Structure formats: C-alpha cells, structure tokens
Length: 357
Ligand SMILES: Cc1ncc(COP(=O)(O)O)c(C=O)c1O
Image 1: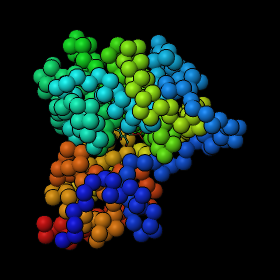
Image 2: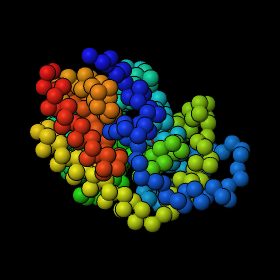
Image 3: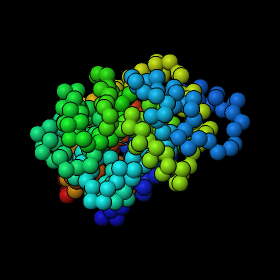
Image 4: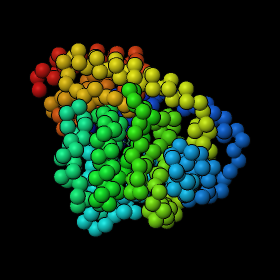
C-alpha cells in the first residue's frame, strides 16, 4: 500500500503536470479581473504602507457594509491573517472558541496558536447548524465561528438560524467571527450578512476575485477597541499588507457585478456536474449551495486519498484534515472536462481498489 499523505501542504505546488487532475486546493482556476492587472501599469509605490491598510481600499469596502466606516477595517494578508489576528486579539487564557465541524483545516491550529481551546458544534443533516446543540455549547465560549458557505461542505446556513445565532451571541456578549470568504459564491440566494457590535466579518479577495496568490483579505468590525488591538498586533508582526496587491484589490472592487455573476454561473454548472456524477457513482454527499467543494463519504479516507494520488493521478483531500474522517473533499475549481475525466477515474477506483478495502 502507498504511504499515507501527511496533510494538505503535501500537495501545494503540485497539480500542473498534464496527467494529474487536482481536486485538491481551493483556488479558483478562473482568471482575476483584467482591471486588477491594468492598475499596476500606473503603480510606482515602494515604501511601507499604512498598517491598517490603504485608506482608499478601506473607504471602498465601507460602501459595501451598511453603517461601516473606513476605520472599522483592517486589510490583511488574506483572510488567514485576519482570523489569526482576531483570535490573538481576543485571546484569554483558557478561553474557548466554538468552531463548526467539519471545519476549514486551519481553524483548530490558529485557535491553539492564540492560546485558546477549540470546542465544536457538529453540522447536522444537509450541513446545517443544529441550533439547539449550538445554543447548549455557546455559553462559556469567548467567541463562535460561523463559516457560511462552508469549506469543506459547501453548505449555506439558513437565514433564520443565522439570525438566532446573532441574537444569542448578542445576549451572551460573545464575539461572532464570520468567515465569509465564499459569501459571493452562493448559488441560490443572497448572502445574509451577520451584523452587530460583536460581529467580526472576515473576507478575502482570494475566492471572489481569484486573487489568492496576491494575499489580500480584511476584517471588518464596528468594535473600535478590537480594531486597534488588531492593528497594534499587525504593526509588530507582518506590518502592512502588500500595497501593490491592495491597489489591485481596489481595482477588482470596481469591476461590474457581471464579473462575479459569470463566475457563479460557472461554479454552479460544475457543482451540478460533480454532484450528479457522484450520486451516479453511488456516493453519499450533501449538495453544496455555495463555495466549490463536495465532501462525499468514503471509508478509510486517508488510504483513498493516497491511492487516488499514486494510482489514479488525482489530488483530493482527506476529510480527517477537516474533522470529517471517512470523507474525502473534492474541490471543483477545475475545468469541466477535467471534472469528467476525474469522475471516470473515480469510477474505476470504486470498482476495483476500493472494493478490496
Ligand atoms: C473558509 C476559509 N477561510 C479562510 C481561508 C483563507 O483564505 P485566504 O486566501 O484569504 O487567506 C480559506 C482558504 O481556502 C477558507 O476556505
């Protein structure tokens, strides 16, 4: 049997060989808006930028959130840094952070780096929050994390549930960290924006504008004390986010809505293809309503990922990395013809190697 693959970083940078099909990393294969590159033609900056982020970008972002001001935003190195800075800014020794499970694989690590402990609420049928369970565990936590649409399930939480979570956390005085990196990639309805004085919204240019490598994200919070703690911490750690990348991000925000609409249409077509294809193969999975992931049940998932890679030249991610053992995550951020070929290889695997597990 081939060696088990240790974690997602094993695959970073792989996937460009011609016969390798990558359902691995969650990075869009669709192009960023050309306007983002055009903005660089005029660019001649080389000095340190504002730690909090370029004023022009924060002002433009403030227009997207009712009642927001530019000083409520911090521009970060992707959503990743925003989540890390928030957790470390609200950290209290022994503090608990309530995470969804399955979860984005970095959450438990960054909670630990912030000196806190992760508690979990399990996503129930269809990937939805079981509010009763959530409300039982939330008291006693320092913050709760909501990720809708979700990585790795692609599920979107119901607006009614999100409103109940909002009211509960408000009553208990808990921070809500709302990781909305997929908020623009919802297929069937508008995103519901969690809001309130303890809500910290985290977002990114990585997914909506396909700019992951440029590393621009942000957090938005009306809690000015929290924002200044975050800025102080960033001042003494990474300092400013790349100014050139922020100029590109600002240009991306000015493109017509049709850029995102066109992409969402493509994501939805691919979702339909992979979801139907997996059902046809007899797999059990939740139907994604946003983002670009499916998480079918597959027993012995570590071995599946290893066999698919070494024997079938396909990259997939072990559900165990996301708190979902016996599941495998497939990102459908790849061309339809590759999805079809991947489904053919998966069929062969299910009919041969997997039978012998
Ligand atoms: C749910 C979620 N949050 C945060 C991130 C990190 O995104 P960024 O590239 O903006 O750091 C990702 C990336 O895949 C993600 O899926």
